[in-house]
Length: 315
Image (cartoon, rainbow, N blue to C red; front, top):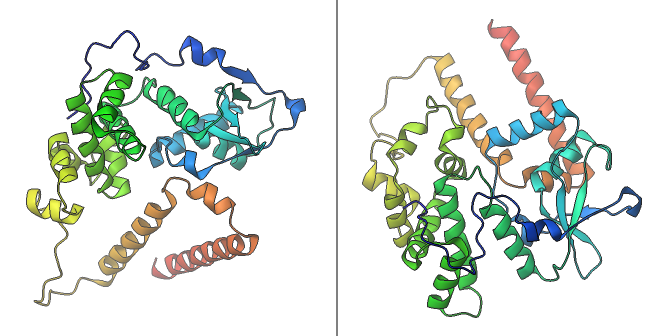
């Protein structure tokens, strides 16, 4: 079930589709270059950012690289430990680091005034994320469900949580319940398929997974969230043609060598792309030891040389 709007109460905090509210803009304080502040990523905050699909991530990098600057500031808060942690702009910050852009000339940051606790951070992120104009209905439903599941772990009654989340997003409590199961169902999907379902418009209709995505409904994913079934069991029940079938015991006619090698390469590239497209991969990689990073890059070079050599031999 996609996010449905109801009449917002007078005191509702939701600002869907309107961008930064006037109050949020007033809470931002520019950070001058002379302040020499370093910015860090807090895992507790990073896990609540809306992930980018590989296509969106590449488009973001291309746009920043071609313009030579980042137009939207990085939003940070000052923690009680004295460090400044990013609240909004994790993806932009990763690209900034990759391209080596200069602070002040090519990118800027603003401090969110008044934020003191992680709960303050979550509330600011929620208001900001829900205000984005380019969210699909599925992404909005995902946000509602995620916030309900997050608050469920706090010292509040379940009904109180439903009511407060409904008020924040301007939806009915029933919609909050359905969206919470929708969120749980989406989380059972493989991550690359999650991107394609939540961001259908970003993908080419010719993509191999889009036929399955077109068959999926929010209602079916709500049922998946309510059940104990895994994603594979869900596929087997509703879409047996797309389910992963066990290998047949009857020996098949062996494919020719080129076809067999193609399938091996496809499997390897799929696994590799799935790992490197995961949220936070670049950030985590950059935090690895220099020895491990060098070993990884050396292996990439070795594989590239091997593939080039093989390509020349089989021409």
